[in-house]
Length: 339
Ligand code: SF4
Image 1: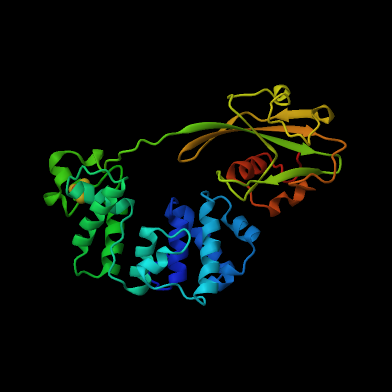
Image 2: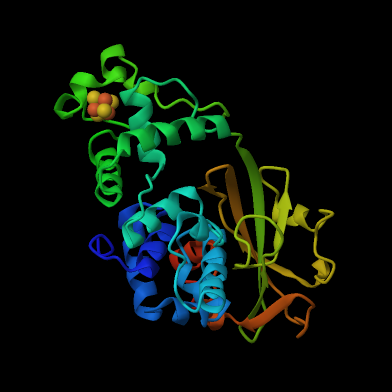
């Protein structure tokens, strides 16, 4: 991994933010693209929001991209382009939690702090056969004490890298390699036969299902309408086709217009139905999103609608969309022709 042998806080921070909730293989090309486009934190701070969101497209968890920009701007304006060199200073940056701060502080600045990420929680809970849940404030403090003890006077830089690699390669969540593990003889969970049950969590993940109906509108001149997502919800800041969200699993296109959420600016009677896609399922961490794309012609499309962007459909590629939309457009070759 290109960031392993470096001590540049900008690259370490960038890689850590990209790798939050993202696998290394998926994150690596994004890291390379970001470093090529913005070689320094000042370059990133000066970038346009739209440009950064576009580069982030496909990586998901878009609040990370928004925080990335906020933090870069904070470092550029408040710290003169230099990252704070302490754990506490780093935690003041948007999007930088205890784990990321510890990683940057130890890897970039040689500070004596132990990281506590998912790998480390798992190793500690198993090695000590510890039943303390990892997802409570109390649990976090407890495991932080354990990892601090384990670090002792060792080099934090080496220890952190080693324990994370050990969690990624040996003490893995599934198919754990206990039979070749150098700690097996002293491992509590291995002796107790609880490896597969640890670590424990107190809160069960609550999932909800949402139904997104996107209205793909096109007039005779190849124009369509998009809107930017706002509010505290998924995909904040990204673009989408006008959306109607429903409680029902599968709303017929004809029935959509009678929904109370049908947009006021869109006269249902002026539309010509073309087709609708089969429902597709997209799994996010806490939500299942079912999407359906309803295609209409709107011959007399008005040219200005508050809060919407009307554009030639071949310009869609310049905007950042959630992956569900990009994939749909690409799969159906709709970036070339909407209908
Ligand atoms: S023996 Fe198994 S559970 Fe215990 S530390 Fe090694 S890999 Fe992890």
